Length: 448
Image (cartoon, rainbow, N blue to C red):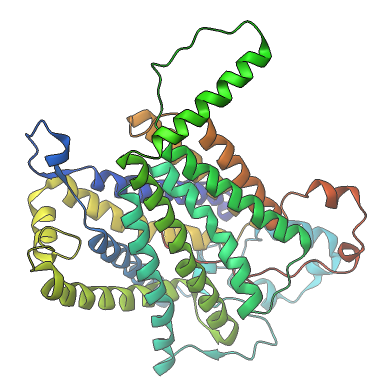
């Protein structure tokens, strides 16, 4: 019961750390580092160091080794662990299976006593069963984790650059395009099968991302208050005309162009994130490795490659006249962090929140259903949007809500959480025989 009661706490912490990841990163982007007293907003220089923010993420991932080490020490001194880490707990999504299978209660004690605690699940190899023939991921094979780490570097850096140009909620919603590329790459490389409703769901996701991007590009004009027309048809025509004029005017402004560029960068970054997920899935299918250790190793490889790239780019670009005070000026970035207390404190908090998000996320996703995981991700995006509105970082846009609704519905349909209308009306014989094979056997590890 103690472990079951701990799940709401872990869900809450996963949600909190996930929201903090995005909001703290956006908070860093808003900090002024030069010409802060200038009345001209164009002369004010804010913190723009996406590469350093990528390095922060990998430091947070390396923090997972602290949990792995603490778990090993605990198991060494306390072989008979508490129910939190050992037996005495049944996963939430397995409750129905245990009710439908009366033979479960008659299993031998050695099976019931296997480590299946909420936290221990993130520290055990994924997809382990009695017929598991996978080799342990050790020795030179550890270097394979450098491949998803490199994808993570590219994707995260592009998303950090995109976040400089868009609001935090638009950034989070645009990341919903990930399911599109995961689906496509799973079919091409993992030979998964997509049905017609899957492709329809992907099309809905693309529509949602497009609407969210359009909402960010349209500048609100609250001062425009037209006189109410006499008829409903005249009102409709006026709204259509004003919407068209507003879109045409807005997309020509520099702010709108920056927003479009930001959305495109974030959406393009999902290609590398999807590649990372597919490569991780391939590694988990062929080698036995604890997911939390996988995150830790990717943190080490990612930080090493990022640091090497930062040094090379600093001397190649950052020291030039055009690259000074830019993304690749490593010395300037370090100066901005050390001399600005808000940036330094937020950097530490980002590292802690990323490490916590991976730990709580892995503890939860291996203990609850995919439905719960999708709901948590949806709540994360909603909370980011609500907090951003409360802080005054962005304005309310109805079109953004419509786009987000498309994103959520398409994602839920794609993951078989919500049945599409046409599929619900017709009797699907395939469901009576076998459940559709998931695209990724192991829940993807979302690092930020």
